[in-house]
Length: 295
Image (tube, rainbow, N blue to C red):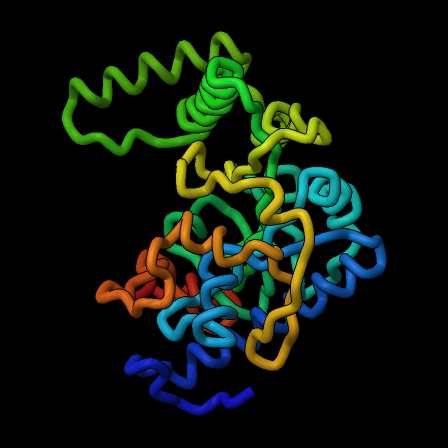
């Protein structure tokens, strides 16, 4: 892989970002080894799938890698993951992370680099460079059963926000309102810890696994129509070039990308992504955030 500064699709990719990419590809290689060892299915998705199709590698202005797994494979990864990624890699979920951390998917981190905001670091969590692994869940076919399903997941998201989050709204009245809502949720749900809430989310999200429903959805950030795809588009796989690797993509990648991005071969005007993160492949996150000028 060329690690020198380069102009790709009219965008200047720095040598530093090339080194970020290289570390992320190393993590993907290790992830694939684990998948082969345990016979797990994975796919590239999101910006990584788009990059493979449009650029045969990273989107020039992208800075992470997105992977997806069917529910049964994702659940197996949650079981074996903590013991399958040795230091400097870290298998990060609310179950394995000791800090104040909640998310609904898996991050695989490389502690030799940095990819986070100072807010995340202040939460006491691992902030190494990362790749994301999401779950593809079957969603109910019926209109009302689907609405109930989404409502249930939304309630869990509220639990997360009120049990572990901080008030983002400004003003005394908004802060008081948030505090009251937080108190109610903590009382009703007995202040579940992040690991407990993560397990609840996975159980609810996966309740239709194996039902043979028409659609699957990436639900890590709640329900979004452009993340709902026909299950047949993920029923088989093809191999696509991604930098120096060949990665597994869904057989219906054209339909998947059109649903998510529309005219996905068009180069967009907005080339920002993850601007709120600090990315550094050369400094371990503990050292990076200990600098006075970064806090």
